[in-house]
Amino acid sequence: MAQMREEEPEALAHVPLAQPPTITAVEFSFKVRIVRNEEQLLRAVHIRAEAYERHWPNLYGQLQSPEMQDRDPSSLIFLAENKADGRPVGTMRVDTNLVTPLPLGPSVKLPTAMLGQTVAYVTRLGVKQGPQGALVKLALFKSLHRYCIAKQLAWMLVGIRPPGDRDYVRLGFADVNDGGTPVPIGSSGGVPVRLMNFEVISAERRWIHSNNPLYKFMFAEYHPDIEIFSSVSGMWTRPRKSRPVFRDDIDIFSELGTPLI
Image (cartoon, rainbow, N blue to C red; front, top):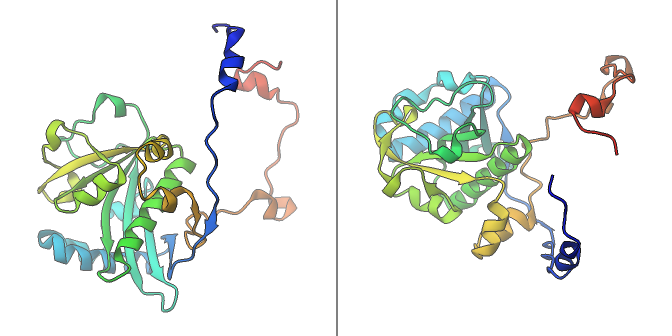
């Protein structure tokens, strides 16, 4: 490892640190959760089919029932529901390549930067029409971004047909193919779509530098109604007898290949 020059710490001392944003709590009229049972899945399917009937009528018939991919171990579904009556107002499905390849189809060639990287492939986005539709879509995107960070997913990937692509451009997505050449993918029913990606970890830095108006929503507001991690329980909440037994004779630094200094 190269040694740090003596003047570097002094030089770094003059680099101004970015001020952390003041976090404020903002509530929605809906909650965002991850689908965990058949009843929730059917509610997600209902709002999905309703949205696709408006924009993708060729897919409406097959989307009135759950798809095989909905129950795939590498998939999860976000569901937004009104707090007042529980009605579904938005949903999206996320497939990852953590265990199995993404269901993209043979026509899709990912760029070099994404090869060998962890990817969240976004499909079946559907939002109920109405005054809160844009907010629901943003809340779903924030839920996805938080999930990607937690699961160490490096990229988001989406195939979208105009004019819906304008929303993704606003969020900071970029074309995967030169010139945004449309390609058919597995979830588009053979209809060519604009394939776009989004680098997860650098999002906050990029949005600050570009003065993106959505930065406050994404990073400076706390939204307690995004409950995508609420089903995860800490191990210490379990009865003592059901906790895993940890060995105390393991040299963790040797196991990790990291020397103890």
